[in-house]
Length: 157
Image (tube, rainbow, N blue to C red):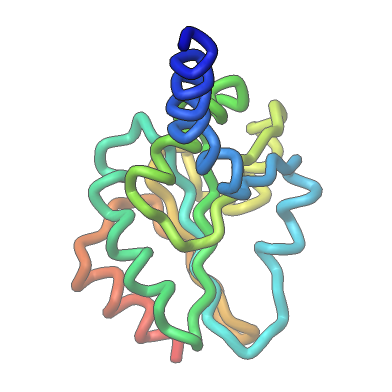
């Protein structure tokens, strides 16, 4: 009898943790992320820099998720959460919000380099978004309304 309750308890606890382990969020250095900021395909690339602790970032995430449904657009959500919070904050956040966009955790301490490399105008504040195609590139250190984001992305077509 005790064994049955123990087994049921283990199954219950593992069912709450198990699905999280299937969320794929690679941790990348800036060197590894850099090629994703310079792709040469025929899409419009939208790279949003965000964090789970950033209220304006969280507010605009659904707009990026909606953009991700367009086959002509590739959305990448680059989390700037602390790497040590990946398992306890980032993965549960992604699961709860059911994010379907590609999420990458940037794990690189040389922010003075990569912030400036992404855009010389970026102060490092969040949210920030890079939108680019083969012919055009724009960087936006701001939060977007849905209308603003869709209008800006549309201007890249």
